[in-house]
Length: 323
Ligand code: SAH
Image 1 (cartoon, rainbow, N blue to C red):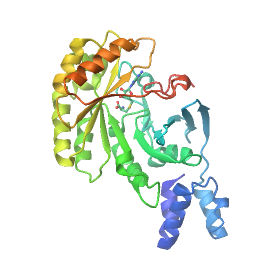
Image 2 (tube, rainbow, N blue to C red; image 1 turned 60 degrees about the vertical axis):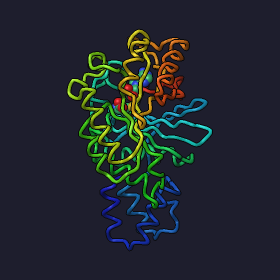
Image 3 (cartoon, rainbow, N blue to C red; image 1 turned 90 degrees about the vertical axis):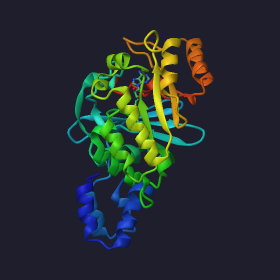
Image 4 (cartoon, rainbow, N blue to C red; image 1 turned 90 degrees about the horizontal axis):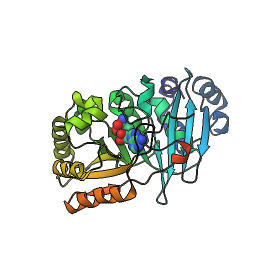
């Protein structure tokens, strides 16, 4: 799609036509303007020429997930993942090609940042799956740091949420951030009831700085202070993601430290069994259980993430590892 061209075409159309076209794109999810027989022929032609609905994608499927590699106009690729729960499907979208943050354990970091994704390039990731599935949730947990592409991410969220477009409730939309404080602040001033998740992975600054260099700029105290203001303003719960890595952040001492800073009624800890890479490995099942039980016994709201699509390199932190 080319949203700029689309908006220009819509400008000269009456309101009912705008709504009709939005519904065709996002709800009926048509793949070709020629199928929109309810539109006048000359309009269909103009739309096909200026805002083609074709998405160049390669799909890789597994039992419970599907990964799409989407080819962009400048030949970069973006990756998006569909996760099939029994409750409904979730699309995990990328907000950038690559990532600038350099987290030591994440495959996306290895390619560095190529560029931000445009609004339509993020939208197309949802649209592609919408053409074959019902979509219940959208999470910004793919490649890139959503808060470093704030404006585009927010305009995507507004379209995902809009009644005429995807019509997915704000509570079914989540953003995950490595802790970009300005982004958290901005989000707390939007009137949007979406979910916020923070990638934590460590309970002290020394370890967190080693794993996530960006925490030198945004230390834990500052991130948590900003999250608390966000909670005050929005009354929303906040999720903290903690990927358990063997002999890195999985000891009882780590759990103790974590439980101290997570002691807040509206914090939730989401433990992720690390998806192995060359440098880091997941702890044993027993160790994960010990870690989880410890947090629970301390009264911390703790869940463990079900892992989708690891066999097709679609799991957390695996985007960009294999093509
Ligand atoms: N940049 C944002 C969005 C990415 S979300 C953020 O950092 O939050 C992807 C999540 O997967 C992040 O929490 C990331 O830290 C985590 N992750 C990265 N590599 C992983 C791996 N190999 N196994 C499990 N989780 C991983």
